[in-house]
Amino acid sequence: MMNPLLNSISNGNPQLIREIKGRLNPRNICLVTGMSMVTQFLIWASLSEQPGDFASHWSSPYCNLKELYNQYHSEITQLSKQLHSTSVQPPNSAALQQRLDELNGLMIYKDCPAEAVNWVLWWKDYWTEVFMALSVIGFFSLIVAGTYMLISDLATEERRGTLNFIRLSPQSHQGIFLGKLLGVPILLYLGIALMIPFHLFAGLSAEVPLSEILLFDGLVISSSIFFSSFALLFGMVTSWLGSFQAWLGSGAVFIGLMVMNAKPIETNGFDWLNIFSPSILLRYLVNRTGDSYSYFPFGHHDVQNLEWFGFPIGAVGIFLAIFALVHYGVWTAWIWQGLKRCFHTPTATVLSKADSYWITACFSLFNLGFASQNFEFINQSKDYYVRDEYYAIALGFNLVLFSLLIAALSPHRQDLQDWARYRQEHQRVWQQRIRDLVLGDKSPAVLAIVLNLAIMAALFTLTMLVYAQPEDYLAMIGGLVLNISLIFLGVSLVQLTLMMKHRKRAVWAVGIVSAVVILPWLCWG
Image (tube, rainbow, N blue to C red; front, side, top):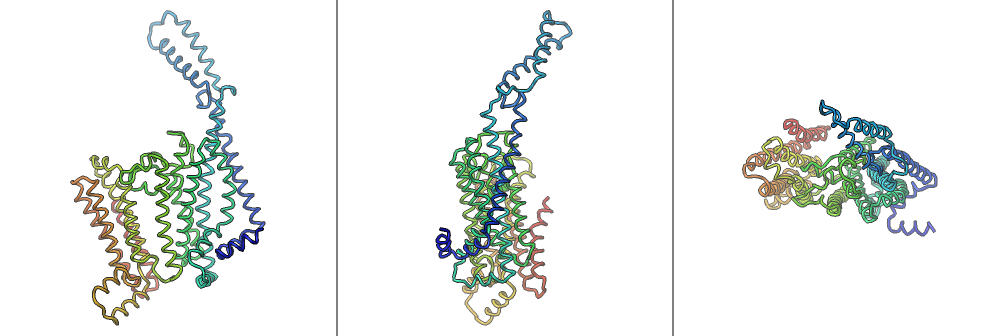
């Protein structure tokens, strides 16, 4: 029965079969199954005692005598005031003291009787804890471990020389990368799949609607596709890192997810980072507010206040889910454009110049949409540090974007020499030269970066005119001009550095880009 299925898959995607056959053997399947079951048991066992500690007290939310306990506590307070607040003893002081002693005797025994425990609420909250733990551990494992596996596999293929052999096969780049994406972490997918029944049972026991559970799972799958695609692209462009490549990529993803998972909503541009974590949707899956969230393994406090260009995407969970899905889809599509170029022409730039203009527009819209949150508060604030902070965050993201664009658009030294030689040998009209500088892959990236800066500046200026106060225009324009000047200086120096004959010119280029990004933040801080 398996052979016809494998043959069918092999006809559709030979690369997937190549990856699966090397991994799906009885030993690996048994090992992954055992690890998945042990993980689920440990989660169940580690959380099983937590609610019981609270259920033993009168003041516990699980004790039905909590209201009676509060009444006794209030009565004790009133009696103490009557007996000790005045120097004159009240006429019925003996009766009051007797009642006070009686209540104090009752309060000594604070344990809630077993028959008074609200076990329905107890189990509901217990399964909520289990559901949240499974959700966070599941997507962390899927993303971080999957990233490591994919980068490590590409590094192995590059070291053995089989990656060039795969390039010569008649398969499309989509089929090959899809086979990698589905096949390399196949054992990880098996382990996660074995957790799904327990995950669904815990969610339904916590009274989370099935539709919301499936919506969250869909968001996790989308985020996994995004990070896995990033891992493939990272593996393709950083093969020179060697064995350190997989640890660097997966470590960066792990640290990034930790920050995104724990960061509260701050109503500024940094809120964009929260969208990259699937856990941002988990708060909508449980009917809890306030301190109860401190027991959950994620942050995102005040997520209901999240806005994008004034639209309250955090007001309803479905709005946020749709926005996050679109967000993942946009960036995954651009990553696959880079994968296509790197696969067919390893020496080409990661991005075409035409694609870079659209990427800058998308990046600026996402960046400015979150940076424009709470502009009314910013404009009314008399604290110039607060106002400058909000504007600096938006411009800081631009430094990161253009640092990546410099690396993605700068051609190799040999390509630049070939372009310069061809330009001298073929005298063309100035329109063709400009077109080559704007769209050509082998031409210097300076003019393309300038056009990207113009796109960013136009969108930033438009947002400033809509949201900012007139008295802030001059300061914001000054910051924008400084931002553009730093980026232009950086790209010019990088282009000159890449033309050097020095063997370490790439290291010098990385140092220049790092200085352009880091030094302004140090000076501003």
